[in-house]
Image (cartoon, rainbow, N blue to C red; front, top):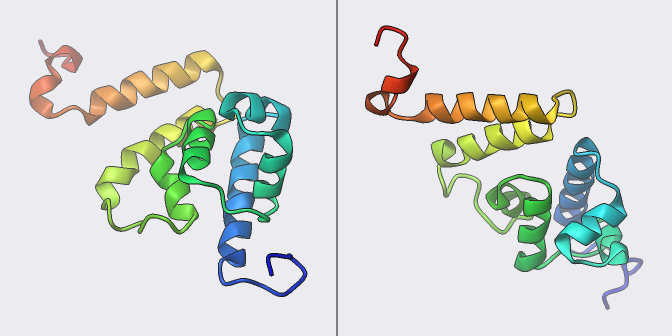
Length: 137
């Protein structure tokens, strides 16, 4: 019944898409499968099966993967089809996607990432909280 050869289950496409997304993010973060397994406390073999779309990971595993990849768990949950991408609203997920992009950009050094995140967080503050950023003061 659960054999992958018995024909496609309705969630097979989503599982494959999620697995490909996780693999791409892991590779962009320059993490080996073994290192990702250490970070997530999930077996190497299971993560490999998730990346190949053979398993739909649990919420706990998805959160562990998101943490290991320095990205929003909501992003992975939406990719897994467990969260409506519009339910949190565009503005709620936008900062996390921006932070994830900065954190996962292989062209940036750790110092570059830290600097960009500090600037980004400073610019996300309401104008009244930015007095320390004003050059006129």
